[in-house]
Length: 438
Image 1 (tube, rainbow, N blue to C red):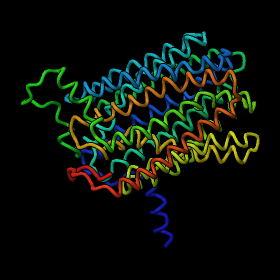
Image 2 (image 1 turned 90 degrees about the vertical axis):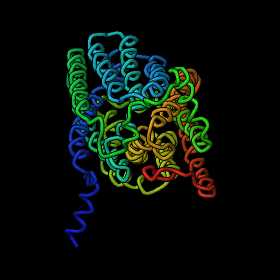
Image 3 (image 1 turned 60 degrees about the vertical axis):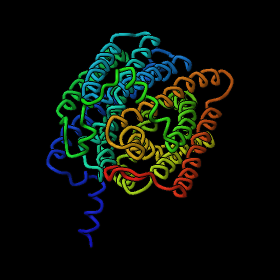
Image 4 (image 1 turned 45 degrees about the vertical axis):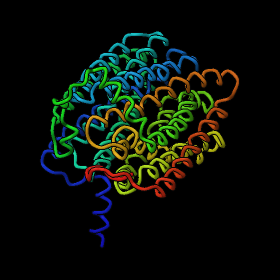
């Protein structure tokens, strides 16, 4: 009995059984995820660096979020462009440019230029993402992709925890040498990012997943590039189920982007937390709970509908700012809010970036096109949300902004549940066996 219970616990922290090519690819993939998480742990402290070392204003803190919208819009074009091409170059080139941007951040002391460089990293990072579900679909079998993605994010979250905690502690201890420490940490982030993409380059062009997804082009097609672009870019919007998904996803993104930019100043100013305390609650506690819950949660995604998966993740995501707004000075409530944030963060990443799109489209060129549509909606919200926050911050308290954003996200959770009921009442679409039904 004890041995069986131990195996169940261990199963929550191990990847699924994989065929040989996928198994080898997973070793490089998790190396990439860990190094990228190390970089992200350093960069997670950049808002606090800007607030404390550079006296950045609430309006300036919205700059990276607004600039990230350009990355989402660039991903719209990249996703269509990569539809009939090999996917890895669309990851490697922006990845290297992102690493260079981190290195450039190390050598500016202006809050404006510092946050603009941070925004450049967001642009390149988000431009990569249409290729991610395609590569996952190529390399890994359909039966376990969410589980694989969840395991990658699980271990990335624990490395992110250690990285952000360590480097926040070093910032706290730096004293008068704070600028030397900031430069050293950001230089390390750039180097780690370059190493991460060197590992990513080792992923196979064809794996144990979909051969249709791996095919770079249709040699029999005589359509011009403009005709292909028009066809691929419009395909997602002809799918009524996907249009329904995008409308709800837009509600979630608007709510999320409305409150996300004021979380660092809320902890740093409203609650008076220092580098270490703020990092503990903003990043460390969610990373711990994300690590503990990610394996089981992602494995459940493989067995249930995409609507229910998003509904649960959005409920946890919306509970966090709502609880912070209701009782910000009660430590148990603040702790509970950050605890639920962990699985919400990992679950959102797995569904939004890795595998959620697989439930709507067959393998092939449409995968990256559907992802482009997701990022188009996200990019619009990411452009409008922070601007609305910058205006609202002049008139409303941080608590009011948190409450409004949290309630909007909770509304999207309820809408995803309603969509699940409607999906069950509709006749299922004919799909290839490779693609799980939504």
